[in-house]
Length: 563
Image (cartoon, rainbow, N blue to C red; front, side, top):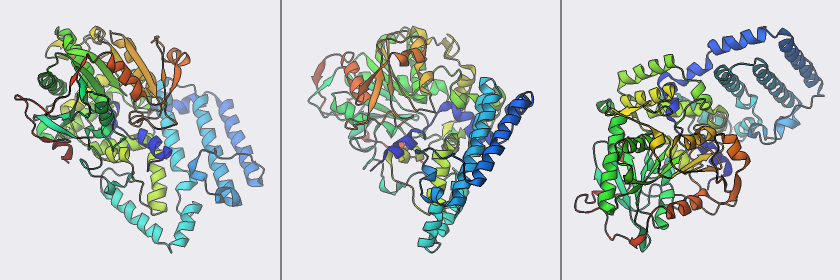
């Protein structure tokens, strides 16, 4: 049974192509001082009075802490200091207060430096990571829960935790385990929606899902999943599967399942993957008998789907698309959050060279990077649970999916990095395929764009800018939670809500100010939107595939099991 905390953490544990540079170079470079740190120091040196005042204030507060008169206290939502001993024990209380006061001073000094956007993001990231690492809750036995558990177990908890620490340090990704995977089996209780493989190529398998209604809509939907991790983020456990829900609404659902590539496939780049999407479209049209398809893409798969739509528009074949859906996808990478700030041309080139030598980028390296992007929740939280308390992490389907990493070919890695650094999709012709320049402004079919308000991988404001790039009428919907958790939003959650607006002004904040909050899940909203664009209804097909594309096996296929 998942908790709200599990869901929040899951939303912070998903992939993003913008972070591919750090995945190749390793996350530790973020913890070393760089030019941004030097710029911070110089800016503070130019403001000696402000800096000295902050340090003096810290000294005064430290005196209050020592005397027991300080009012500094952790936020009630701060899970690190929930144990009553942090407040009841005078020494521990003072230790927490000193830690919080020092951390607050460091944050104020970043604010005081008045840095530009990139330097500010980089410096704040370094300060926040160091502050999280230095929390007294991370220390064995100092953490009162750790001490109590060690006493209750006769030290066995620390022995178990130490053994797990050694195991995690030896095996990539070198971060604490976030999920107990023992209770899940792909194809059994996860990625279990019935369907069949109707096309298998060297690059992907095409899954056609079995109808559960007597009638289906004429126009089918093709989903392009991310190129990192497996496709089944949208087909999790029963009653939590977007695919299962869509099929129940009468959709003809087709999903691509990417092959997990290795060094043999190093040369697969944008043209290979867009070519695969075009090949999947051919199969969907043939099997469904429809001349049009609703094309949908998620995260990096959304970027590939957008390029595909742009290619169809440029070659006079946009009539193959009935509508277009983007989920948690950033097309305009300008100031795209912390990840964008941590990438520059020099490190980008070094990252591409490193993956080129290996032939691919290892998904486990990405998992490590993603964890350090939110260290409090994704590293130190599990550090305490796994190592200090000697416990197993919780079982949660989204985190199971997140742990099921895949590789990315060197060529695709290079293409994504270049696209991110150059922001190639913003300018018409900034990206070309087979000599054809791509202009997303010419994609004038209706589009549905959904983002998560707490998404730190693809910030919702960056996702919103897609509404200004696409040429057709666009509906933007803002879901709750983070990256993938925003997508896993089944009906029945009384806390679920989403925001909508009939207008799409240039400013994301202007959109938010006039948006209305709707109760329930955005799944119901996109269903109504699709109903208007999916044509009429007809009797559901009794068999999967057709003579040209016969069924090759049951879903979720074979590629999803590749390590």
